[in-house]
Length: 221
Image 1 (cartoon, rainbow, N blue to C red):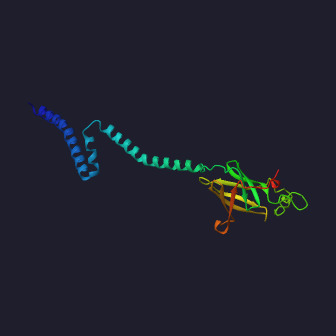
Image 2 (cartoon, one colour; image 1 turned 90 degrees about the vertical axis):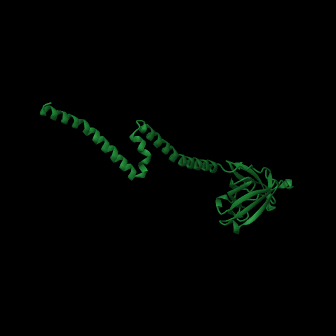
Image 3 (cartoon, rainbow, N blue to C red; image 1 turned 180 degrees about the horizontal axis):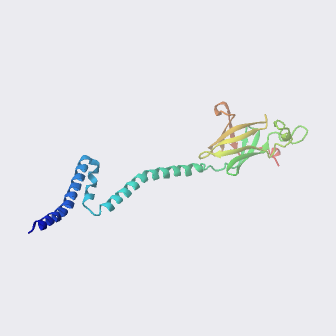
């Protein structure tokens, strides 16, 4: 073999060996990098397996679903609480005629989902001159000539639990003042009402009795 042919063969073999040497160096470098970084040990199969890209993508999707699971549960629980608190506790309207302070009887009725009460009986429905008793103590002069019979004096009571109501108002014809009021049906024939201004502790409790015997001549109508 001539020196020229030998030189050509040497160059050809050198070209063949260089890629192999380079590939071995790359693999060795990756191994050393993996050994230096334990967090990458789990990805070592990806250096040898052709399906590792698919596996890694599935792992990412699984991780995302796991991360999303708790926030979704939290959101669902929050929405459930919102839905629950959006509807007031159910309380049936206590039907009948209720005697208040032994002077006034009111008829309780539903007014757009709230509880209201109007006067249907007065201990003294008329003045000495025979005229109907009027709302003389009202602070609004324009309302002082309205009859007390049929007047709505309780309004806005909101259901606040079984047989309980709150955030209502009560107008007292005796002094022309409007008070805050809460109410509770303590038994089938008794309502306990707390009448106050601002602070319930500083108010008074009124007991209303269902369907008491009333004089027929004092009924409004």
